[in-house]
Image 1 (cartoon, rainbow, N blue to C red):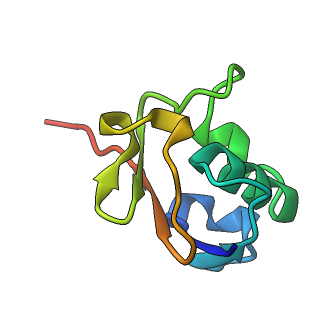
Image 2: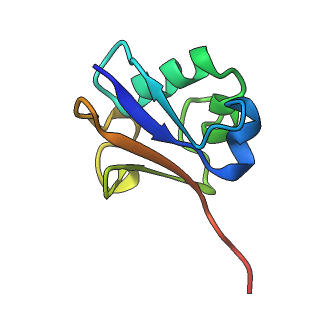
Length: 93
């Protein structure tokens, strides 16, 4: 199984500048995909998840068009070949 992860500009320092990377997760969930991403690109996971492994408050994560917070969170299933997008929240006034 392979998955493509879209990396926001702010995290590309951990992926050698790549805007998208392919990972081969050991399991079918978002958490598995992020662990595979971390194995290949150390430093990304700590910026996306907190110390408990939960998605950070100001980070949005999508599998295809689906927000994982509206699905099963880090346990959301990722179909083979799916696109995961990491999107930092935008705030301001």
